[in-house]
Image (tube, rainbow, N blue to C red; front, side):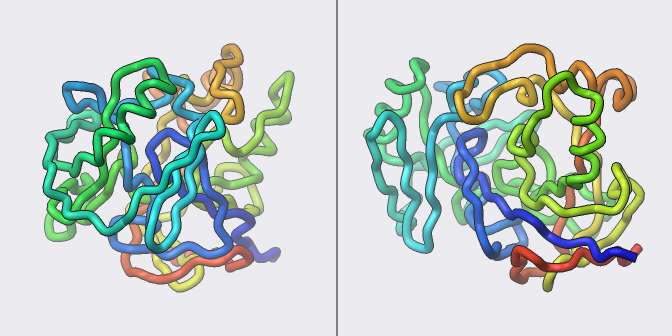
Length: 266
C-alpha cells in the first residue's frame, strides 16, 4: 500500500485573495495560523469575495510572524500584527454575524481604489466569536473567516480524475485548499471520519460545496467560462449542491510539514 503524503500547504491570509505557499503550517484551534485572518467587507459589514468581485483574487499577501504584507499594482503596505483591536465592527459571513476589528482606513481606501468597489479591511480579533456548526453539543470549535470549517483538504487523485473529463485541465489553485495530498483513489477522502496529518488529528469532515469561484482564473482574477463547475455538476451534484474536496476540524494544535504522511484513523 502506497503511503499518502502532503504535497503542498497553503494559507489564504485575506479571504478570497491570493494564496501563500508554506513548507510548514502551524495548526491552531481556529485552523492554520494566519489563514483567513483578514477579510474585506462592504459598507454594511457583509463579506466580499471573488463571487461578487473576482479581482480580489489578484491581491497579493505575505503573512509573517509580526506582520501581513499586502500588494497590488506594484504598491505594497505592511500591517503590523500588534494591534489594539479597538475599532470593533459587526461583520457577516453567510448566516453568521459577529464582531471583528477594523484595520486603519488608509488600507481600506487603497484596496477600494484598486478593486473599484468600496470596502473595508477587517481582522479576526481576540474578541471575535464564530463557532463551527459541529456534530457535538459539547465541542464548539472556532473558525475565523473561512466559509464553514477551519481547513480544506484536496486529493490530487480527485483533481486528476476531474481533469480527465475536462476539455482543458485546471490547476489546483482554483479549489483554494490548505492541504494538497497524493491519494490512492479519487474521492476516497469522502469516506473518512478521522485522519492524522503530521502532529494533528482532524475529524468531523464535511464535503466542500462549490460555486462559481471555480470558474475564475486565480492569476488574472478573470472568470473563464463555465468550467470546471459545468463538468463537476454532471457527476458531483446532489440537489442544488456540487461537491469537491473535504473540510475538517482540528482536534489539537500542532505543525504540518510538506512530505508528512496522511494516516486514516477511522
